[in-house]
Amino acid sequence: MSSRLKISDEAAQYLSEQLNNLISSNEGIYAALIISIDGHPLVKQAQDDIHESKLAAMMSSLLALGESIARESGQKLCQYVIVDNSDGFLVDLRVGERMLLTVLARKDTNLGMLLSACKNSAETIIQRFKL
Image (cartoon, rainbow, N blue to C red; front, top):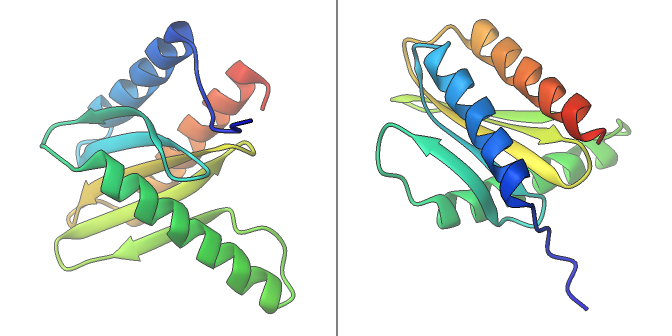
């Protein structure tokens, strides 16, 4: 029996709208994805072409690594991971128990504002689906 997360067309439409809102209201964001906790892309909104399958698998693994590090250091569940690259940021955060929000932003983006926007979007999704 597969435990792979599946979402309805209605849920996919809602998530797509939320990602579109996130991108359009935050100038530096150029891509956003909702992925399953096991690394499968569910919904993507992007201004540029990205390889969502590879990115989803890697970002899921990255958050799992963050969770392992948190446990080993005596802390609780990892809520988000930020990757600061030469050309921008990747933010990966939990959306309930079974989904992640991954956001890609340009380097000129204010990191605090980016994280706040991501957390707000995740909370909106959590409340909508009662996750």
